[in-house]
Length: 225
Image (cartoon, rainbow, N blue to C red; front, side):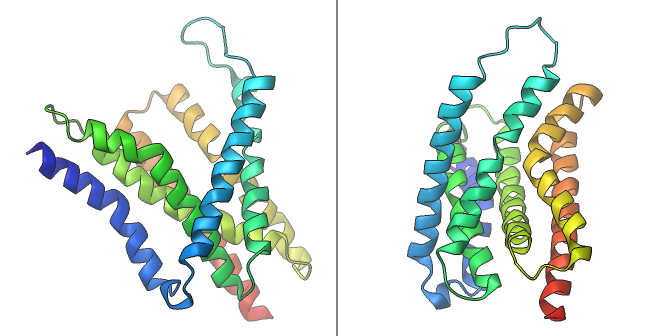
């Protein structure tokens, strides 16, 4: 039974990545090693972020239950490094915008999936006692995939030299939402005392809204050129 539960969680977490890779056309471009290089860039960026956070943002020592708003906001600002990393990956790949976006997003999201969820799923989902948090973790990995695709698309639009002036404000707002989404979610959970399933639903709705706006701007921009 525990192995069956692990298989369900593993399939729910990893198969959407495989399906996205196959159906997006990346397999036809032999983009596997490009995605691996994007994943390696992700690891380097996360290492730099951890060193920066450990150096300049010590552990919060306030009272129990007190939310360090300023400290968490400053820590979330460090996620700007992800935007630079995605831009670096896309700038090193030649091809259409769709290809650059999908390579960067797939490599980035897959590296995060492997590094942050592989071991917890392997150790926890195979445990004797059933726990819903591993199903939630698998759903969250799918949300992360959508998030990084949207983020890569927004970064690609933001760095275009021919971006129309009317697009600059919405693209900048979407960039800010992509960077501070985790901070906003943590703030919502703390203020409204959201449960785990409710927080996951809010995160899915927020990510879906950002993704739909990004898709609309991307399609409009591509068809206008």
